[in-house]
Length: 354
Image 1: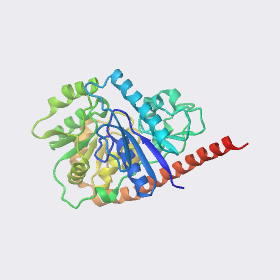
Image 2: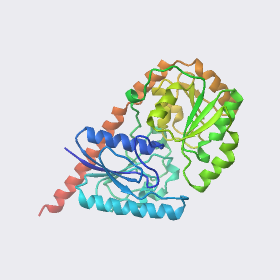
Image 3: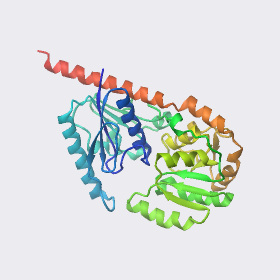
Image 4: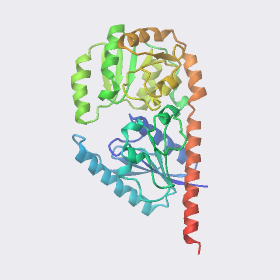
């Protein structure tokens, strides 16, 4: 069954292969896979996005991303979704934003991927009243955190493109952080740990113009930067791949309950061990003492950064190939699309039966 799938990105973040956020990267991989498989892929994303299929752009907000900006972006998404559904025979709508309930279509088969911690979503949004709206987590650990009454389908774990990520290049003596720059990501803690370890640290990431994010960067990150601890800004895929392959380790100092950590999977695919706090799904991604270290304090993080060079790069790659298959993720989504599309077809058949 050939499908037409409408993937809808978070309204305030551009989507594409060079996107910073994991949700945007997953959407981009699905868009590419749909086109490769001969389906029609339509993507709604703000200006600055790119797509393998058909891109429907919404305006990009300028200036501070406050509630007014969010409201305008959500309204633009509602309009774009309605326009796309009127123009094309959409089989499935797939929503990726944390605010998906603000532009959830009023009818039709809809898949919602919950990329972020479940307690960040309104409780009522996790209890859809329609049988053709399916919500799902991206890891078993995230699924276990579902609040009472949440209606979630089986998780679809994230995967990464091993072949695209891997490079044959020697390791260099620096640790790496790749992350959005905001308080819950704890980047200042990685900077402190790297300084304590005496190891250079490179931070790649984007400071979105939310007031809390810019204040965090100004007050907590910038004062810790020096000649051996550098902030490079957002990295596109090519630069990200180069840094991930060259780093002695990836550091994930996140204070949030990480739902899956796509970047940890990418690091392991590059043969780079991961040092992280054991929050959310990270203990399921990292095998302590083999593919990285799970730590609880800045002092432990510093010691793990030093010890990371003793871990075997090939063991990291082997584990990534075994557990984080991109094809496995794509197949699971395609199956969900097909099953949801059949729900829509069955409903249409009932509607026209005398």
